[in-house]
Image 1 (spheres, helix red, strand yellow):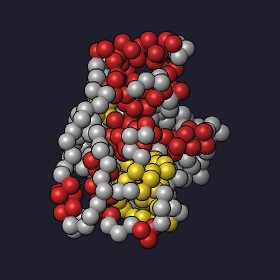
Image 2 (cartoon, rainbow, N blue to C red):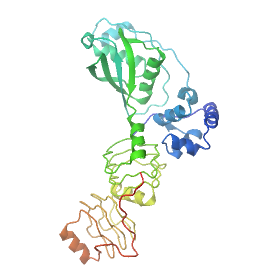
Image 3 (cartoon, rainbow, N blue to C red):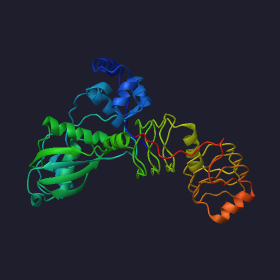
Image 4 (cartoon, rainbow, N blue to C red):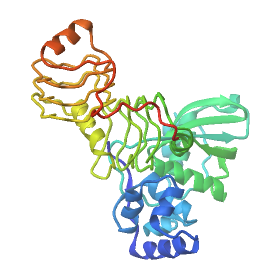
Length: 369
C-alpha cells in the first residue's frame, strides 16, 4: 500500500532538536513513548528519512511545531482558481458563488493512499443545497483533488467527506485560520477529523485488545510493545514500522498483515507470520517454538516438525500431510479432529494432558495490559 511520505529539511531537524530539548524529553525514545510511536519511526524522522504523513505530523504536533516549516515547504502559495465558467460547467451550468482560495504545495503523493474522514458543518438549511458538485469543487480548490463528499446530513448542513491526510489537513488549516469562512454562500461552522488511528492505539495500549477485531486497521509506526493482543484478529492489519516487542500474540491472527524491515516483531512471531503468509512445503521447523500460535489454514505439508512445540496452537484447516511429527508436542492444540489426532500419534506426535516437565509451558492470559 502506497502512502504519502515527507522528509524533514536540515533546517527543520535543527528546529526539532531544539524543541525536543525545550520540551524536557531526555531522549528520542522517551518522546516516541509519549506519542505512542515506535522508536524507529522517530529515529527515521531525525535522520532525514521519509516518514509517512500522519506520523510526520504527529511528531511535529508533539513538539509543538508547524509540520510545513519542518518539511521545508512554503507557508503559502497562491494559485489561480478555475474560472467561474469552469465551475458552472461542473455544476451543470448552475449559478454558483465561489470564494478566493489558496492551494499549498503537495510533495510526495503515491497511487493508493489511505483516506481520512471528516465532517464539515455549514450554517444553513439542508434543503437549500441544490448541487453538491460545486461545493465539492470549492473544497478541492482549498485542499486537493482527493477530497470527495460521501454524504450530507441535517444538523445545520453536515458534509461527510474523505480525502488524503494531506488534503484533509489543508482544509483544517484553512477553516481554523479563517481563510475558508464560507462555501458557496454557506458559512462554515467547524470541521471535525476522525483521528481514529491514534485513538485506537491509545485504547490498545491502555486496555489491551484481547480477542479484539482489528481486521485491516492501520497500526503502522505505533508503539505496541508489551501490549496484550491475545486472540486479536489482526488479519490484514498494517504493522509496518510497528514496535511489537514483548507483545502477547498468543492466538492472534497474523494472516495478511503488512510488516516491513522496521517492524519490531520477536523471532517466534516472525516465524508464525512467515508460516501463515509465505506458504511453502517441507519447511524446516525442527524444535520450533509455536506454542499458542494461530496457524489457521497453514501449509505444513512435508514440514520437519521433529521436536517442535505446538502446545495450544490453533491448527484449524492446517495441512499436516507428510509432515515429520516425531516427538512433536500437540498438547492442548485446537482444530484437530480425532481422526487426525490418531494419525499424528501413529506418526510419533505427542498428545498429553499436560506438557512434560522440560517442555515450554503454555502460559495463560497475562496480567499485563
